[in-house]
Image (tube, rainbow, N blue to C red):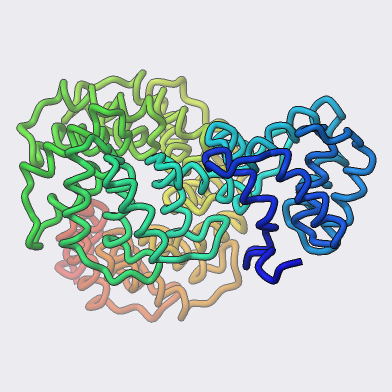
Amino acid sequence: MPENAVSQDGYYLPSRSLMDCGSVAYDLKGAAAAADRGAADGIPDAQYLHALFLYTGAANTIQDKKTAGELLGLAASYGSKEAAIVASELSRNPEDVMDGLLSLRLSGEQRDPDSCSKLFAMYDKGTSEVRKNHAEAVRWYTVCAEDDNPAAQDTIGFMYLMGKGIRKDRDKAIYWLQKAADNGSASAMYHLGLMYDRGLCDTDHDLKKAMEWYVKASDAGDRDAQFNAACIFTTPGIRFTNVSKGMSYFLKAAEQGHAEAQYQVGMSYAYGDGMRRDPVSAAKWLEESCNNGFQQAMTDYAKLCLDGQLVPQDYEKAAHWFTVASDRCNGYAKYALGCMYGNGMYFERDDSKAFDFFKDAAEMSEVNSQYALACFYHDGRGTPKDDAKAAVWFDQAADQGHPAARAFIGMMRITGRGVPQDIAAGLEDLNAAAESDFPDADFYLGQLYYEGDYVKKDLNKAKKHLTRAVKKGDPDAAALLSRIKSERKRW
């Protein structure tokens, strides 16, 4: 056997050089004979190819499926990845399925672009017949890329860029993406922009080059490029800032169904940010985004419908989109539904349902729901009163920076209600909450220093905290401060 009979990839060249249906040297019978000889010499790729000829009976080969299966197992044991894939498929699929699959594979090995495209689609996603295998998918689609298919060139380039099924290779990524871009692929232009924008595959971040490609891709109609270009154009304080151009790109992407672009356009119309304020257009685009499944649009649009200031008030739509987002495990939407049931807003008041929504969202670490759930346990709403569980959830919310929760857990530690008493830790919590501008915390501190039950009575400190709470608009603090002043006058 000649030394150059096997390529660096392990391919048996005497057979494969005759199997290229696009070559003037194409000779399937000759390829079958060469594969037979190479298999006899123990070359794994030749064994794999010979097995395909044996199984399908192609090129006047005497069909022998049993020997083909044995040969595939032998080739796999000697390191043929292709043989290992087919051997595994033989063990899982019925004979009629394998007949079609191996006929398609043999056609693919002849570098037939249509067959290679079908095989790529199968291995890229996985089917009932074959398991997902990105490396195998790349192998087949590379044939299509070499046949000057721009979609294949873009896909192969992006796979090299991301290391999907193959080792990352920036040079090969640029080679294939540039070819696709030269062939008019807007997606390839977008991927080149993404490469420079995000520094993919160890590429130096270069916003200028990124924008050059994004704009080319945008003008060629790629909606993802339009969205990314719009985000950069609307970023304040950089050399590319151009809000009007950015909004025009957002609008182009939105018109092509880009859900997040539709959300951006809707919010811009709602707030008059980059667009002239238009509540009707805001509602239209936000609903489009919601219908396209963008959860941020669902929650924000529902909030706007509930509030009724920037778009027409519509409790039914608010309830609908909060419910859709909640069903998709959106924590804030669950919190909002808990509030609606707890306050009897649109829905009939139902503390039990409110509690359930708050609990689901709290367990998803939604901080407002943790606080609300703690309040429900504290007050016995929708669930039996349980100070210990209230303390747990107040503490969880406090750890996430919720000032009201920190004030509550502080008072519980001071009084020893639901948790072991720890006055020093409780005062620390209350003071931290007060510094976060939560007026109730200053009120609680003022009350503590006024009453003197848990800390040493100190009217000066009481007045200081109560005055701060009054300045923050706390009516209870104002009443207590007035009472203190009245008492001091009587003294």
